[in-house]
Each structure stands twice: as C-alpha cells, then as structure tokens.
Amino acid sequence: MNKDKIFEILSDWNFWFKPLPETHVRKSYEEEIAKKSLAGEVIVIKGVRRSGKSTLLINEIKRLIEKGTNVKNILFVNFEDQRFRMFDEQTLLEDVKNVYLEYMKPVGDIFIMLDEVQNVRAWEQWVLKEYELSNNSLYVTGSNSHLLGAEFGTALSGRYLDIEVFPLSFKEYLDFNDIHINTKAELIHNKMTLKQHFNSYMEYGGFPKTVLLEDEALKKDTVKSYYDSILLKDIVARYKLKNYQVLNELALFLLSNNASINAYNKLKNNFSSSFDTIRDYVEYLTNSYMILSIPKFDYSLKKQIANPKKFYAIDTGFSNAVSFNVSKKIGANLENIIFLELRRRGKEIYYYKTDKGLEVDFLIENENITELIQVSATLENKETYKRELRVFNEAQKELRGKSRAILITLDDSELIEYGGSEVEIINVLEFLLQL
Image (cartoon, rainbow, N blue to C red; front, side):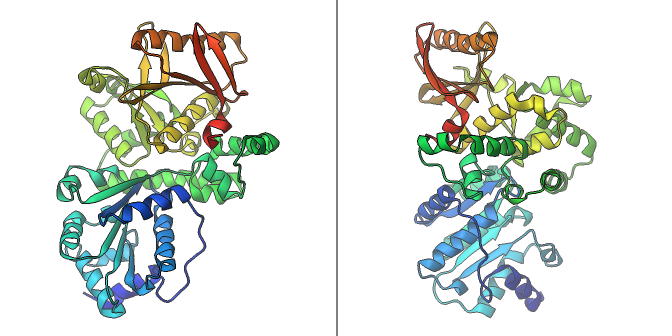
C-alpha cells in the first residue's frame, strides 16, 4: 500500500486545505438528509448518475461545518476516481480510513462519506463493521437501486435510512435560474417567462449540469454522454454483458416510447431475444434508474405482477436525446414529467385500464384509492375533452369509489362537473409549483 498516493487522492477530493466550492441549494433533499442523520443510522443517497448526489454530500459538509464540526473530521471519498483501481479492492476501504486517520489525526467522532460506493466489492460488509464498532457517522451514495438489493438489505437491515434523488424538479429548475415563484399572482405575472422555461425544461430535462448550460447543442451532447456512461459503466461493466447491441436498442426503444405500456413478450418479439434476456435487461435499466416503471392496478397482487408495466424515462432530456420528432412527443413528455413529480412526492403510483379499455394515466393509492390523474397537453379538441373526462366516470364506477379526479394540462385551470362528478382541471405549472 502506497500511503502517500492514497492521501494524495483523498486530499484532491476533500476540503482540508482548500475552500468548499460554490453549490446550488436543494432544500428538500438537504433537510431530509439533516433530519435522517439525527437517527444515527447509515444514510444512503441513491439515484441516477449525475443527478446531484455528490453535491448533496458537499452541502452536508457545509452544514456540518456551520454547526461547528472541524473539517478535518470529515472524510469524503469519491470511488469514481480511477486512481483507486491501483489498490487492493479487498482492503481499500480500511486502507483509506487508516491513511486518513494517520495523516489528518482527527480528534473525536468522524463523518465518513463514500461516494458511488457500488464501485467497491463487498463494501456493505465494511460499512456494517464500521457501523457496529464505531460512533462515526456514515453516508454512502450509489447510482444503482441494487445498492439496496438483497445483499445490502440483509447486511444492513434496520441500520440505514435511504433518500432517493432525482434530476431537478421544475421548481428546482427555476431556483437554479434564480426564479422564485411563491404565489399564484407571481405565476400569472410571469406566465410567459415560465412557459418558455417549461418548454426548455421539457425538452432538455433537469440534470443539474445541463440546466446551467446555455448552448442547446451542448445540452444535448451532455445528456447523450450521460446515457453512454450509464449503459457502459452501470450496466455493461457491472453485469459483464456481452450483447451491448440488444441492450442499447432496448434502452433507445423504451426511452423514445416513454409513457407507454410494454409487456416482456412484446419486447422479446421486437428484439428477437429470449424472454429471460429482455426481463434481465429491463431490470438492469431500472436498477440504473435510466428507466422507471409502474404496474397496472389490480386488487389481486398476482395479476398486478403479471400485467404489463408502463415505462418512463428518468428525465425527458434522455427521452428527447434519442427520439425523432420531439415536437410530437409533448403529451408523452408532459406525462413523464408528472410521473416524476408524483414519485418525488412519495406517491404510490399505478396505471389503470377500465373494462372498456380506457386508460387512467395514474391511480394513486394510500390504503384506499385517493386520486385518479389524467394528463393531456390540451383539451381544445372536443373529442379529446370528452375522452379524457369519460375515463373518470368509467374508472370510478369500476373502482366503486369517489376518488379525487384531476386532469393536468397546459390549458388554464378550472373546476368542472362531468357526469355527476367533480373534475379538477389543473394547469401543469400550478401543479408542479404546488400553487
């Protein structure tokens, strides 16, 4: 072990001898991290690559320092750094800690932050040992939902609290652009500006770096580089796949057809692959957070599992970067954005199909079915208007309940009555900004 080399890498990433960088605040995530850190459990921050997990750790470092923690008591380790590969993976975590203790000589309890820790084999065993034998605070981040898979869940059962990080919400996007809308009056006054920003948000997505870029071509190139990085680093390398072509074609298909229902058998036929291959590849894509899915609602759990899933992109920038005729995808992208917002709000989400084949975009369950949500770009067409509203009547008859009926659109908000039921038509900006 070359101690000097390890410390050289650590000093490049830590702030023992240099000032902390300027960063953007993501208030809701930072408050959640601060609150959960009080429990003394391992804090697990998970989410798609480049969604801002590392920045959240840096902002947590700032918070700790403001509370009086000596910066020398904070160890930040970025395992994306290729230089760590020259060391023995079996002892890397222990070696890193020992070098840090020897060179920095912190006094008292320390805060250990392991960024993209899934790059280290058997890391969960080391974290468990550290949790059991020390009073140190532990934070880990990862770009794979398998981070909380069976092995990790077993090793750290009851010892961790997790936080799921997404690309920027529209409200965060506006914050990054120094636009702060807190009332409906402010929304109405700034309506044209907000519409322009929303169009940009819908086309290029909410990855923090792309939001801060001004050049449109550079935005697209950056998103495409994220796509390649996820496929190659988080899937091909991790699962040692040999058939990159099928994986790439499947990812392109699901991203360009976001907000669509797809069964494994249908996908199998489309790509002339085995059922097992398609099932595994979809699982890898969802593990990496590139693709997210929701099940069809059914009172039978067995049927719910067997039914086709509905797939969404983690970010509309991904979907648009690999799609043709983006201008024709407004409805799908709008639905994708609403889905991501519902996930951020912690909703239990399903889609639903009536016996007559009418589709409810989102069914929200919280012990009981609480909301039925439709998404439509505009209701100006009379046929679209009738079709979207008819869905609520049919669904509520079958589900035998009076759930809240919400129709989210680019049109103005209004409250209407249709077929004896009250329907809330909500403008997408009001919904996203919760006004």
